[in-house]
Amino acid sequence: MDDLWMAAIRSAPAGMSVLSAFRSGMRESVNQLPEDTWADLTERTQLALTVPAVRARFADELLRTADVMAEAVGDRTGRGASDPLVRTFTGALLGAAMIAFYDAHFYRPGFCEGFAPPLQRLAAGLTL
Image 1 (spheres, one colour):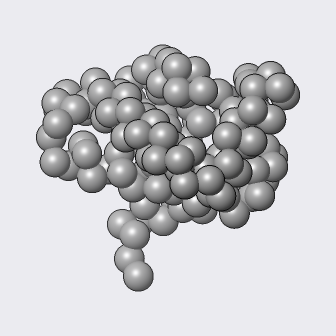
Image 2 (tube, helix red, strand yellow):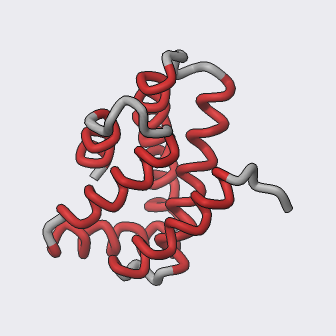
């Protein structure tokens, strides 16, 4: 899914904000996933929540995803992927995606709907 998501982000119009590009890219990539791929992603995530060895591998995969996302953010902003602001922003996006996926109980339409409010809060400055 990362490849679809990052391709959608990179192809977003130049004037689109990074946050909007991520929101649009996530929606586009999730809707393009075949049902069996979504089911596999759901199964792997549920295993990661219950099996310690799988959880460790899942954590490694999240770090890899964060690196891929940071490259895309860096490309859109003209900053490097290792820039602290890029890494912080990327972590917030990844956290929002993870929580939306979990809160939707891995249900695809619920995930897409659940991803929008956290991104809106990030865009507004994430005040608590």
